[in-house]
Picture 1 (cartoon, rainbow, N blue to C red):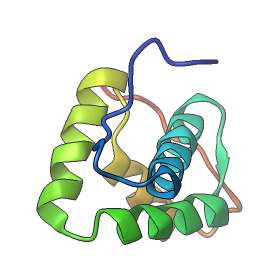
Picture 2 (cartoon, helix red, strand yellow; picture 1 turned 45 degrees about the vertical axis):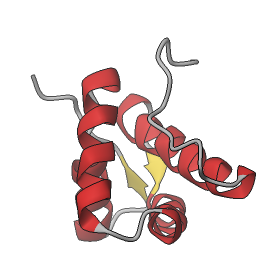
Picture 3 (cartoon, rainbow, N blue to C red; picture 1 turned 30 degrees about the vertical axis):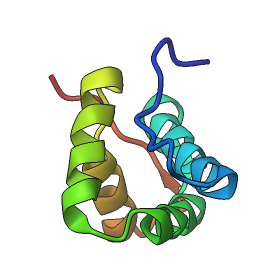
Length: 94
């Protein structure tokens, strides 16, 4: 399912950086919508952190993404790190 919103992106990023961040956003969505492979999510998060290394910008993007989608980057990554299961599936909390 395609989102009906635009991902928060920095247009100063290179094409490769945009792809890395967009891929990560899509996997976060999948974690809420249908479940996602834990390892894939963590690898994508590492790619995201290569583009967005500082915590302040990460938090800002997480807030923007959550406002647009209702999904938390922080909660998805935390669940993946803490899980021992192959598939991570989250539930949206109001």
